Length: 298
Image (tube, rainbow, N blue to C red; front, side, top):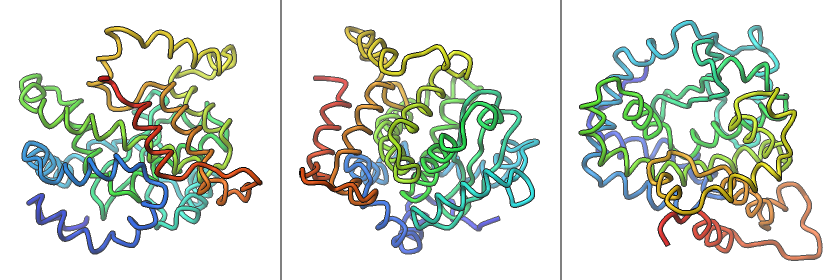
């Protein structure tokens, strides 16, 4: 178990040096608003208090309690998933993270939790049955992107703030939760980009996102992806838009459109050797369009 200083400001300062090279790699594709808000979070006292409490709980009992009967992925256990993890780590130039298949997670859900030095990915067991190999590559790439970009402690804090059984605690933690929600919606854009860099196929990435949204392979087989995304987009208007202020991820149509914009950048085209004659979007132009796309209050 990694030894973590439970004072959040000291923890952040200590880990900046160790993670600097990894963060520089992530910054090549990371969404600019994610970087900006994450830097500001370090100065928000309610967030600092929540993260300190999370680190303390995670290292004492949280990790063992969360994993339960989870199976650790290795060359002998889930070798195909192990190979996907190695591929993602190689593409993103990060150490291969520890990954578990968690039978206690009964939905198409994945969690990346822990600390910067002791991060782990937990795949809900339905992932293995309902996602194709390439779709799993996208999902694992996303979570590796979270780790590469220093999201782990904030994701862990947000997980416990939103799942705490004590409603009084959840109410008292609302200032921290709202700040982390706002950041998380931007962090998911960064993670989606990491997943696309790993799988290099926009259709596969979109299919994986839609499957995780509907939660069923059977339902997905009867869905036209473009029609479904358009339907969700049309239903988002009016007062329903304000629910997004309390969401940890952007609405699916926004995520898909944001990823489509990233796929048009010169950076991504150069990665997949598809530059062509037409210039792609700069990262700055892509980020500006994504910022407009994600805006809840206009």
